[in-house]
Length: 221
Image (cartoon, rainbow, N blue to C red; front, side):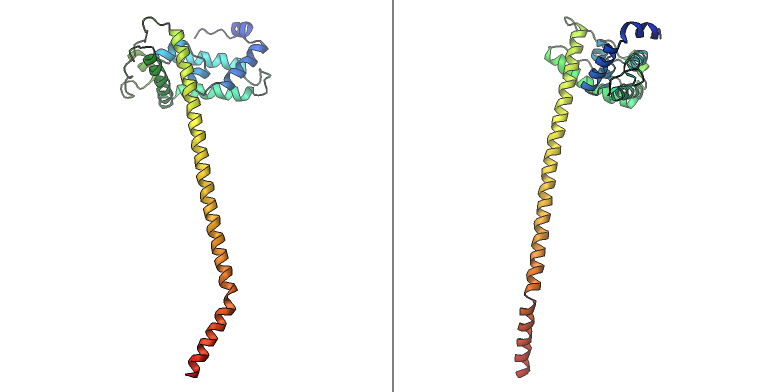
């Protein structure tokens, strides 16, 4: 590609830009398209250009690499962009992540009264990113600018992620409550058994005396 590292560092990699990018990466949802800040068309077409991914990764890594960025959490941000680049390089993981973006995009299209694009070719028809891109025509909704739609898709992705986190938190809370109830019931059962054993032991002398009295009566007969 024609990415100029020196020019990029000279124009965009000041300390403020580095720290601002780290804060952005720490605040966003872990969708690789958002992490790498891909072009708006990617959020509408759902076509991932491998060269664009490599360029985005190089730009972000130059900004937030912990050896170059003073932010105390730069390493976390750097790991996020590494994970994003890896996800988009793997066909299965890329398809899974794009499916999430597709759900958000289709929701936005329905909200805007636009025709939802047809589903993409199957993995057997388009085994790699280049083939998928060639087989998938660009989506250009009439009357709506691609950047505006992309912004809504990104916002919807964030909302979906927040909703998922909320549901996971509720599920965890409910499971924790159920486990606490099971633990409490088990504790009550242990206490009941301990009390029963204590009562049984406490009545031992009475049982012995009763047995002796019974046997003595039998002997007298």
